[in-house]
Every structure is written in C-alpha cells, then in structure tokens.
Length: 278
Ligand SMILES: CC(C)(COP(=O)([O-])OP(=O)([O-])OC[C@H]1O[C@@H](n2cnc3c(N)ncnc32)[C@H](O)[C@@H]1OP(=O)([O-])[O-])[C@@H](O)C(=O)NCCC(=O)NCCSC(=O)C[C@@](C)(O)CC(=O)[O-]
Image (cartoon, rainbow, N blue to C red; front, side):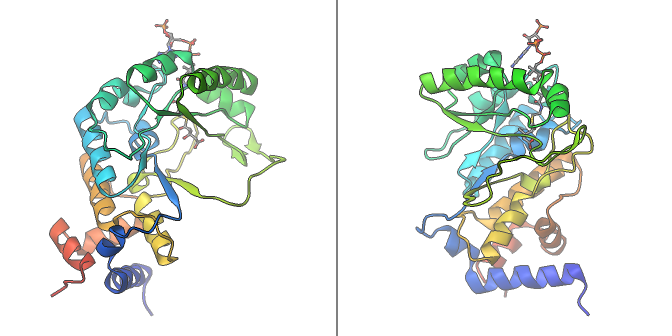
C-alpha cells in the first residue's frame, strides 16, 4: 500500500506532468480565486527571530514573481506589541512595487493610519475581534472600543480614497472565550482565500495559534480542482523554501516538503514543471 508521502509525490508529479504549470501560469484566463498572501505580515509576526528588512523585501518580491497579486506586506501596529513588524516603514519604502500588484498593510488605529499613509499605502486591513477576550489581548480594548477605533481608520481611509479590507478575528471560536456562535455567517460565494507562504504565522496574541494555510498547498489544491489562480507553483515553492531556509525551520507546506525532499534545486523543479524530466 502506498504511504501518504509517496501518494502525494505521485499526485504532484501527475498534476505537473499532465497540465504543465508554467504554461498554465502564463494563461490569459482570469483567475477564479483570488489569493491573499499574508506571509510577510501574519506569517512573520509570530517569529521570535527578527527577520531583517532586506529578507522581508526579497520574500515579497519572490512571492510577487510567482504571480500573487495581493501580498499583505507590513503592519503599522505598535512596535511594543509586535517587534517583528517594527521595520514596516522600511519594508514599504524598499519594495519594488510591480504595477497591478496590491500591497496591503494592517492598521490598528489612527496613529498607524498616519504612518501607512506616509508609505503610500493603497489598501489597508482593519481587524476587530468577534470575542471580548481576544479583543482585550490583541487590541488592549473591548470589542466596542476596537470597532470605534477601526471605524475612525476606515472613515479616514475612505475619505482619502484608499481601499479598506476588514478581518474579524474569532468568528467561530476564541482561545480565551471558547466557542463563538455568530448569528450571521457569510457562507457562500467565497472568492478570496488568505494563505501564508510556507504555512508561517499566527497571531502572537492567540494562545496556541497553529499557523496558517500554506500558500503552496492552497495553489496545489486549487489547481487539482481545476480552479485557476494564475500562480506559478514552482516559484511559490521556491519562495517558501527561501524563507524557511532563512528561518532555519522546516516548511509547514506539505507540497513543499514533498517536493523539496525530492528535488534539491530550483532547476530540477523547473525542468519538472516544464515536463522535461529526461
Ligand atoms: C491597538 C494597540 C496599538 C493598542 O495598544 P496600547 O498600548 O493600548 O496603545 P496606546 O494608544 O495606549 O499607546 C501606547 C503607546 O503605543 C504607541 N502606539 C499606539 N499605536 C501605535 C501604532 N499604531 N504605531 C506605533 N506606535 C503606536 C503610542 O504612541 C504610545 O506610545 P508612548 O507614548 O508610550 O511612547 C496595540 O494593542 C496593538 O498594536 N495591537 C496589535 C497587535 C497585533 O498586531 N496583533 C497581530 C495582528 S492581528 C492578527 O494577526 C489576526 C488577523 C488580522 O490576521 C486575523 C485573524 O486571523 O484573526
């Protein structure tokens, strides 16, 4: 009987061989699912080792080179709360912005908003919580206080012609308050999926946060379902390996783990994706 890793290799190889990822990635068909890569922000914010600005910038550029069009790149929260994001101004000033790519940032209050504006940010994310316990831990205030602050940010942003995206943390469960039963849940019509390169991340204030859905696995999964994302799997795998190597920890991406074990260098993977396995 095939063991799980062998089966995964078999599936990856078959998908790569039969469909040719590189050709697909160059296709002009509009993607059916929008991927929001949150690795450079949510992914890294929980890392204890400080990731230097140039590594963050390079990671973002690798992710963009793979075809991802939305990369949450920085966070203008208090540096006392999340030190890893304390160089967000430098990150935003040093990334080479590619036309057509969106580089949103996280903003918790008007102070963060002002800083974001100075960095020519075009889209920001606000992040109230659905539970009292998490709101206190993450934002140092109640749900109501959080909503009040985020409304200020959203009003300013809309006035300034910027886009605003809203997260709601803990809609079904909270590490402090337990299960949450939201009355209204948006169930259908999902067109945007958040994921993080290499499965990195988790909020430092969510006890036991276990990481995020790995972008490589998401791309692979959607590809298997025949859903177009316009993302080059080989390049996104390479970006995942880049940051995992830097952090000195194994990738949380199952696809990346399987492929990395088997293919040691980028050229081999490109050959494979080009169906040139001789
Ligand atoms: C909301 C605050 C700021 C309140 O933090 P606070 O300590 O209550 O803030 P304050 O207003 O009392 O100010 C205290 C000091 O912080 C400074 N300060 C205040 N704001 C800023 C700012 N923006 N930038 C820089 N400095 C700031 C402010 O200037 C002052 O400086 P001092 O006078 O002492 O020198 C804090 O709790 C905070 O930053 N929380 C964010 C924590 C965080 O980043 N968590 C991870 C992101 S959430 C997440 O990952 C979940 C998500 C979004 O992915 C969705 C999901 O999956 O659930």
